[in-house]
Image 1 (cartoon, helix red, strand yellow):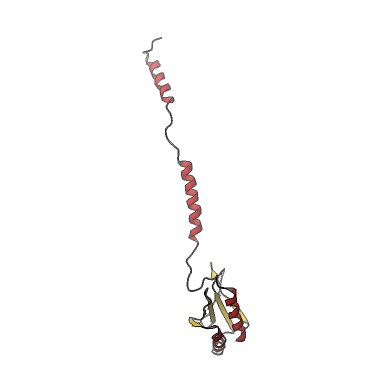
Image 2 (image 1 turned 45 degrees about the vertical axis):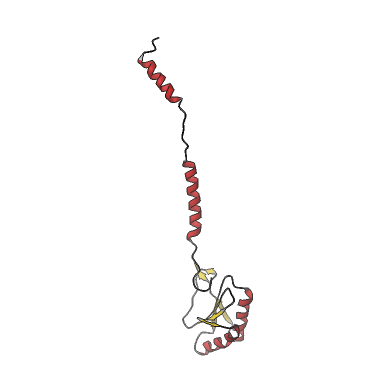
Length: 143
């Protein structure tokens, strides 16, 4: 057999090409895992909003508040606001009675910070009862 024959040379070239090592790293598996992690962590942060106002409210489906209503806010620090006015705990029953005399409905809306101490909210409820109001509504943030 002749080694210079064109068929023998082509066959030798094919065998030599088949024996080359594959010198690359396939990164598609790594990319797909990283993409899944990015999507998972980004979807957790899209729904969260920064706290609005002075009180972080509990979340519910809906709530209503009229303009002339008696609205009390209890902050995380225990400060009490009647409308937009900072008042002490002892002034609260008189303010509520004045509001009811001026035509507000006999219902008190309380916005309590989600991190407020229960004792502070309980003191506000006691003062509302001293004012003679039995209907109390806790407001919460809708989502």
